[in-house]
Image 1 (cartoon, rainbow, N blue to C red):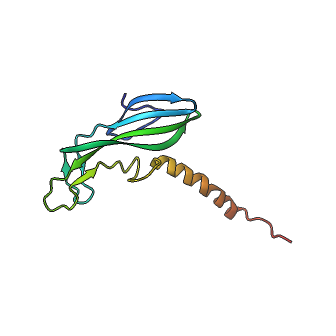
Image 2 (image 1 turned 120 degrees about the horizontal axis):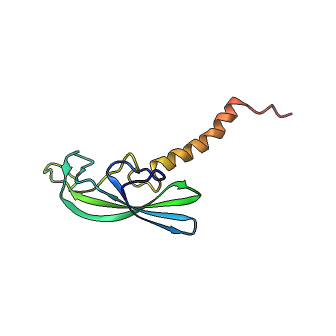
Image 3 (image 1 turned 90 degrees about the vertical axis):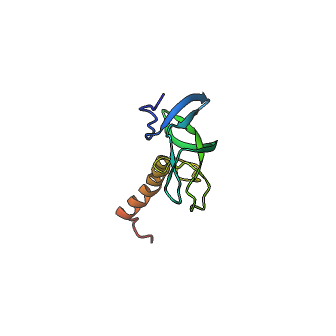
Length: 129
């Protein structure tokens, strides 16, 4: 299953499995890219080192909390001059490095947090007496 209209994924990611536990939707997501680019020297690499799972929260879907279990890989940087010998593939449009939430969830939370501030500026409270 590549993607879903209810849970759109960027190119290079696909849904492996979906499981529901109470009000939680656990979605296993794997990268399908053949290569990754070193974050320091930006050179491509196809030589895999290892893989690991990363758990991030995503926007709710149909009253379910969404937990993405990302299967990401580590690669060897084969550039001799690069100081980073092993790196993890990046998913910048989807989840930032070290983030625990997706970009779209962070943006939604920021919008909700900023909206009340906008109303406060537009309609200031009457002076207190």
